[in-house]
Length: 125
Image (cartoon, rainbow, N blue to C red; front, side):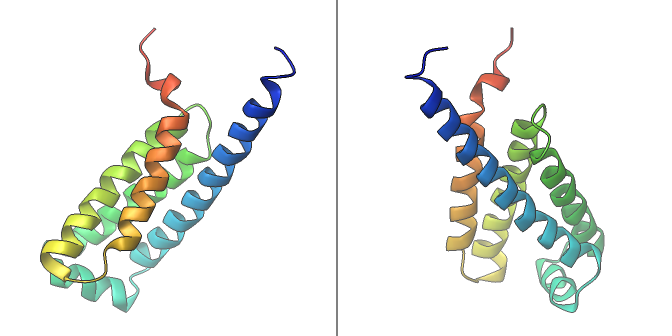
């Protein structure tokens, strides 16, 4: 490895870990809110209309994805899982809840960045 590639590699590592930790913290917080039955979450999922089982499933998926983000060997798959959850949240917020959706787009863009930075893990050998 040459010294010319070291700073870029180090910078990529710092950015990737920063995004992983940020996204993991965000989704772990969201998972705790859902899994602990916070009234706001219960009401939101009542409005969605699929039942409280869907709140628990969503919280479990968020927790699993967040933990996976922190494990380098499966981080890209955790990011993909969370991007799918995020896409579902986008649809729910636009079509059913009629609330602000820009934060979901920003979170999706950050998850897409995590996936892009780890795209080499998705290649089949």
